[in-house]
Length: 313
Image 1 (cartoon, rainbow, N blue to C red):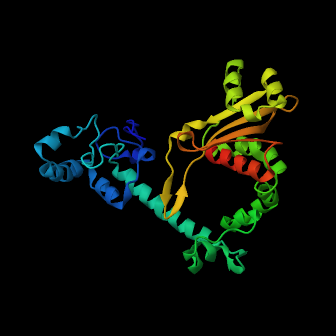
Image 2: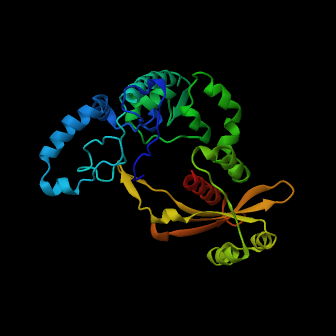
Image 3: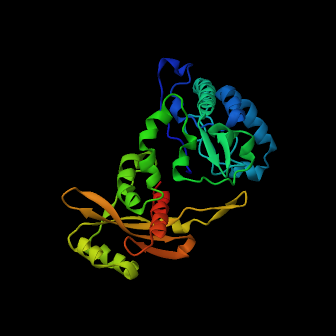
């Protein structure tokens, strides 16, 4: 995100000082302890010492090109090196509070990791979840999971996360191994849990949009999709925008976000949305594959559903 933090004011008793309005602690953007230390020095010190030293190092041309501070809040001298960095408000009271909360959070994470006590057998070796994820065996990150249910390896027993999730484990695991279960769970999972990532709204397909989609999905566009479109019961989640992203290689492994266009049919009595066809593509639309329930193999359909969920979340 490029831009500046809006001047959210905070005149609560802990605001402190005679500086007037200040950025609320929720607007503070952590930039590491070095940035926090500079913030703790206070606006006057930041402007009078760090800014002065940075200005002394700048050539006249660089100084002229450096964006000036706008508004009542002092800026850190970071624009020369990071010209697109969002604004970092100087909030001494809020910074101290943030660091204190982060320290508490770090202690909570340690306890959660120590709660990873359930044993798992991977590639013939049995270890606790903690040992697999954080112990000596973590130096072998290529060890695959043998069963979808083993994705619970990240569930801690603190306080009752593992116990609360256990009744749902078989159903969730089925979404990775059973094509019928995965199809049935696809939209309810997004509708119930997807807002934690984003607000994904399916688009109701109009006649004009149907003509576009009919051309794009022509090899798999069958009577079922045609009937749903004619009855006004066809919906689409179009995330083809991700075709603009190039794949990356991280530690020798490819990393990418699939671009997907998912067609869903609406069951009138219940209002349930069911995925019927999915287009999956990569950078600049290459390669592009079409998958339709009933035509694709179970394995291919499971892949398409996971690709769609990946791009949605």
